[in-house]
Length: 123
Image: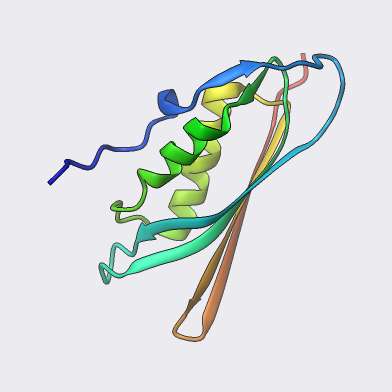
């Protein structure tokens, strides 16, 4: 049985922004996110949406997919995982702006959506 590895920002690959200086928005929707509830051990399912304005680098999608899959066996609360996804994304590609939304499927009749944002400091 393979050993689960902990997701880390350095697993996210980037490539040079082809339009440095242009303010444009990239939206990435990941509808098959899975993690584990740390209280019950039950799987949690959700859609993770990234909206970002790149600076010098863009995230490479296959590496993002593989990074997100590493959460499959991680016991982590919704609030913690969405903040972690934002922190790792910002560490990897330093966007001008980034928003990460986790929209999780209902559990016990309750739906949860968590939104975290980052805006680069202006020099």
